[in-house]
Amino acid sequence: MNISLPGPTITPISEPFWEGIKAGEFRLQQCEQCERSIFYPRAHCPHCFHNSLTWKRASGKGKLKTWSVIHRAGHPAWQELTPYVVGVVALEEGPSLLTHVLIEEDEIAYNMNVELNIRHIGPHPLPFFKKQEETI
Ligand SMILES: [Zn+2]
Figure (cartoon, rainbow, N blue to C red):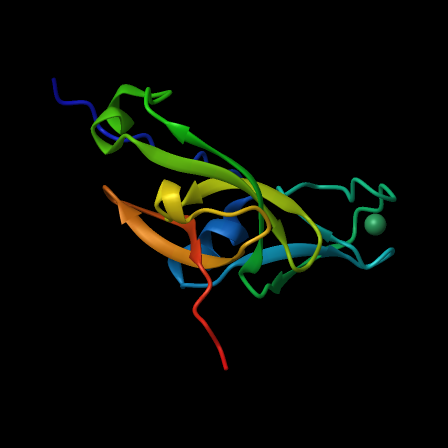
């Protein structure tokens, strides 16, 4: 069976995010009214409903809040990559996202520092997160 990996669904609203990933950057929208950062990409701020949102380069760093080891993929094309880890990362800028986590199950810890790691899965550059490099 040859099933290709599904790529992201890119809309006019999310396109700047995916252009950032292609360029090696993690971008978030920031509300010009309440100054909060937003993820996922939207037309309006979910905090104050203002529609003036600006794309900004984000740190790509955060903390792992929870995770799960996937043994049965949600799409057949991902099955050969199992087991893999998905988790919720709370970004330094505030929002959280559900993402792939490139950390072995026995090394994972609650609240550990993680950072963006863009990987090509098939033809698609996708935002994954890995353990943050030690900085002294
Ligand atoms: Zn706002």
